[in-house]
Image (cartoon, rainbow, N blue to C red; front, side, top):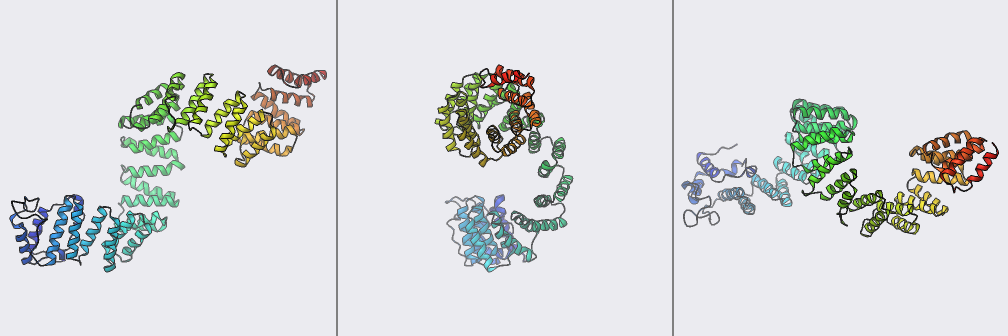
Length: 608
């Protein structure tokens, strides 16, 4: 490398003193090439004299127009040498850049390049300046032009790769980094960046090989080791990933990123080990907020609600302004049925920024949990149409009215809500259920059909429609709807049970009925499905199996007249007259109007 002569060095010292750049700007100007700066003694002397530099720096830093040398904007060099003018333009670039005047800085640097078109350093500097101003296309144009003249320029190749990396154009970034590697000029930084773009393209095997080589030369490169651990995890090499994480943690026990990533790796396969890792880290680093948040979340996922609550309360003590933590504490208090504590949390959040509707909704739940129904209703009535939580608030409002025995008000709330835009499937579902329970079948049918058109794949609404048909003695329509449900969800237990029972009653295809009842019972254990299964066995003449199921159903639902009548019919078929008579008498106690049961009772008593 050439060296500066004495006069050149003096000039540079003056320039550096006068044009002190900002920290970020120094990044662009850290290593100017010697041939650009080198001037003859005569040119330097002339330059210094013409700019007033020999008189000190005051003339260069915001001079007064009337006192002192002319400003940089008005100065015109009388020196003919182009490189001297280029140096002056470069100096202007540094000055403007230090003042964050980037348009003027770019103009000055462009003039410097025009005056010294052979300088690769200036062109790379211009490209970086364009990047600083987010003028990426212009930066690419400058670098590409330089590479067309100097295809082996390592710094230009790396910058072009970095730009592509920044733009997430991984294939292009890979090509430029790989050129540097092929030429044998790649340092650890280039190798690491190449590994990262390979990893993003799922070329993990190559990326891992590069990182392994890098770590062989620099075992303490934690960033590279963490990246390698992530790649091993992506490849499914859990043991290798674990070793890399533990190496980082052992070398630096306070490496929070390694702890978080290793913990997430453990959470799925060994949650207890993840909990132990987080707890151990927090013993030495109690203010590691992100680790404590992860520990609380894992406790929640593991159903350890009280432990999660304790961690969140510690977090709140450390970060008292974190409203999200307070909200989580309130939710856990709701989960634990600590209604008063939950109320206090959500009241404290009302009036503070963000999520006001959500906090009000949960406040209403806390009030309802304390049987303060009127207050809960008052909070829910504050939700207006179009609000994010309007629909769930309406559902809760209707439920609370129903819980007070005011079904008319509940129906009114849901009807108005649907008219105001709360047209979710649940709104229709609960409205149809309420109307059906009150035997207001025309209105229930209207909303069931309307909801079905808006939510044709919602099996809950379809099931409600089928039940309505059944209640109106429209069995064929009900069966058709239940069959439609099974085309959407073949494992819908209620539809399977309905169809199985219908087939048993009709005596049609009892084998299919048995299969459906058994599937329904496996999906959703229920006394009513057990009754269906026992009734099918009865229809098939399998009395002992029928008896086992029907008696089990009777124990589960002792006050159901239909199940009790089924038992009576079975006992009659088995000639157990006393048990049959007792069953029929109980049916009449439960339902004095039960059709045909009195006649069956007489027959049983005649055979006693």
